[in-house]
Length: 91
Image (tube, rainbow, N blue to C red; front, side, top):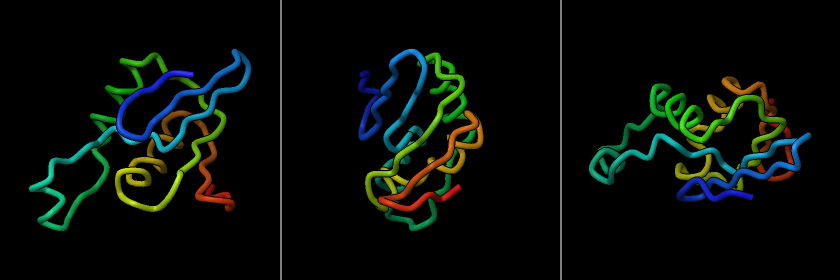
């Protein structure tokens, strides 16, 4: 198990890899208060590379606040993972 910051944990047993949240964009508070935030794919890709994350089996979104859910669809697409929000599979 490895803590990757904010709410993101990487869990692997060598065969299966799971991420919680996968939140890497991390917009600043002024940007959040402005009301329009979106995933930053360059930051997501850079974080995946920095942490050596290639293929992921699942991304579990802990709850729907932006600091947990914002990047999950992009992380899943970039790693081939399925992502889950609570007890529902999103993809």
